[in-house]
Amino acid sequence: MPELVLVHGDITEQQVDAVVNAANSGLLGGGGVDGAIHRRGGPEILAACRELRATDLRDGLPTGRAVATTAGKLPARWVIHTVGPVWSAREDRSALLASCYRESLRVADELGARTVAFPAISTGVYGWPIDDGARIAIETVRDAGTDVAEVRFVLFTPDAHDAFASRLRA
Ligand code: AR6
Image 1 (cartoon, rainbow, N blue to C red):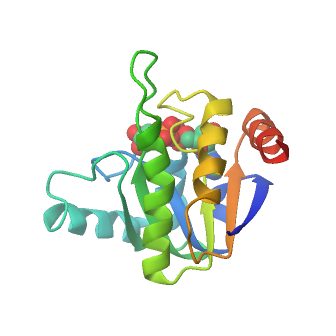
Image 2: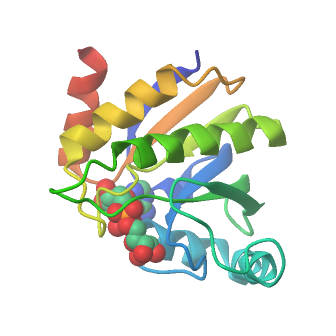
């Protein structure tokens, strides 16, 4: 099991092998953490995403899946893009959210990444309640059976940091 580390801060500043992006299926950028990664990482990341859309991912990246690109100018080697589910009160989509963490770690293993930073996927624009998002993130990473040595959850807001901290203590 990887060591789980909590950081209150900005994922674009993390010196890790791979940074996970909470992207959308189009893979061509957006707001939130996606916007920050493309801004800080520069145009190389977008060029790599466009190339994927022109080849392997013509219909975009499905929810729950993950794919790697260069990290451009970020202090990391790769960005692993994943697409979280939009929160729904009517439908249980937690298997898709768990899949984002599992698939990202599977891609990290393929790359040989030893340290991976995750944001709290789906808990911003996509509206997932932070306590439940933290529970799914931590449970899934703990059970993933990955070779990654350190998983760093990088939480942008005090609320997100508190939610992950109390879930880790539980
Ligand atoms: N570092 C770490 N976490 C951050 C950062 C940052 N620099 N910026 C925001 N967060 P969101 P989603 C946190 O909305 O909910 C985009 O437009 C934020 O506080 O980035 O999966 C995509 O293109 C929240 O806790 O992603 C998609 O269209 C968490 O990151 C859509 O938003 C996730 O918030 C994806 O929505």
